Length: 167
Image 1: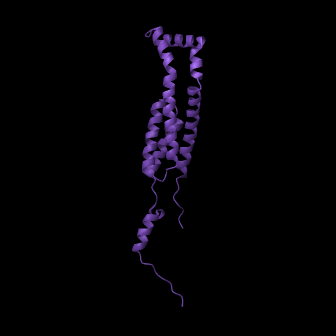
Image 2 (image 1 turned 60 degrees about the horizontal axis):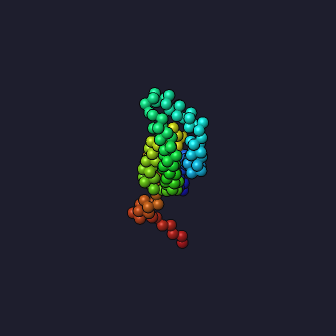
Image 3 (image 1 turned 45 degrees about the horizontal axis):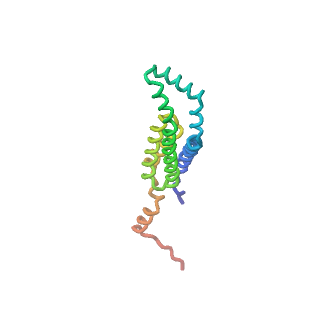
């Protein structure tokens, strides 16, 4: 008897990437929602060094007021970024359980890999590469016809079955 078709490799790759994504989104949520970023940016020493570093890197293009405005907007941007990462994490977890719908799940993991690539600017390759590989594997690896119960039922109806009779 044939073994059932399993997607163990895909599931392992997805859950490795999911664990990293959960850790990153958890860390972002702690920093964003606990107020740690506001406390850090309101510290006068940190703020002064941030302004000096930005002024030297930008070459005096921005005024101090513009730099202050950018610093004040960092917590808002971080909160929006954290929300996006949390939504991506939830979608990835939900579709990790829906591997039997291989085309739909493949499309979703392809979109998730592109989204993680874009929002992380390519820095978390250990998340978007496994998602991309899983999407490709879901598109390429198909169940064998003998493993699909629907196909077996139809093909068995068209075949004649020999009967063995005992006297």
